[in-house]
Image (cartoon, rainbow over all chains, first blue to last red; front, side, top):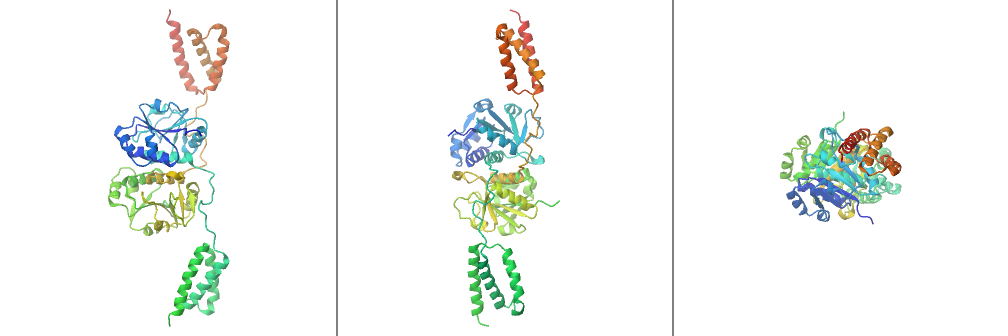
Length: 242
Length: 242
């Protein structure tokens, strides 16, 4: 098995919680390599003492320059919330950019760069990038939290468009007609016993009730549970004196 | 314009940073309604004093029960990392679940439920849900950070599958052949002047270099910049006599 060819590179992260959150997302989505360029020392130390995603943090590497952090990569992709900065490289939306990254990971190492919490990637850091991608946030509030941005990018890399449309956990069938008819019978008995339906108009009530039972979706087991409950209520009504 | 029909409901959140992160993601992706069920008081207070996503936090509502928090919604969707818990409702992967939510938002209010940081949604909270969805994390480390989970779900709701394959920022054209030939000419002059290529084998060098220039992709403007640089170097070599 070829080892994980993706390197998640955080440039000058300042907040230990963000480093920890990035590590956790890397672990959640089955990636492994976290690289930090000139992290704030205290932040790195604190993050390493965090419990979650321990193996990712323990194996994380620290570099003093972006050049060294990406030296074994052949595709360098920046992330940016853009807006103002005049980019010198192509900018893709994440949906498309992630597709290109995924294809490239079959062939070579990719570095995915995230800028510092406050300023994002600098022009100097962006000059290492082949292209950039952005998460489709709204223009009025484009800048995302670092840990959340990392999580969304990694999610998109693992996303499966062709995933089955059916739920993973089986959707229960509806109860069979025979079961619904038994339910209808007890309900009618209850309505007559309680005085809601009188004999003369009971046929139209039965019709309405059958239609209602066909609109409501009742799984087989739930139909049996309801039947048991209603039978008990019926028994109580019939056996509690006048 | 119909007001935003999505309610993001956090059940018993404990960490102010997570409440703040959820609010920020809600703002990033253009949603508006944050609802909190029995948040830890201190956490809620601290989160409200956060700077980011102020309008979302200011409009957030606090409830003492899940029942009240979702009362105006007709579709209730839980989020879970599952694994062990025997779910009584259908479970979709986020890719599919988000599609269903998006379709439903055209017609009615949807509540999207997130459980507490430590325990996720309780069985009681899940009993309010029509179905649940899960973010496709790996089984060995399925549980996500709350703020990251909210961000990923909202991203998926805003995701556009049909987004143009081209970069938003235009991909530069390659320099025209005429421009590359001028570049080739200066390079050859340089190689001859520096003694790298001697007259006899200069034809094969020229061939190799033309092929190289066709493999390398050079945008028109960059070709001109390089040309200027190389001409200066050539001038220097020719004018610094032995």
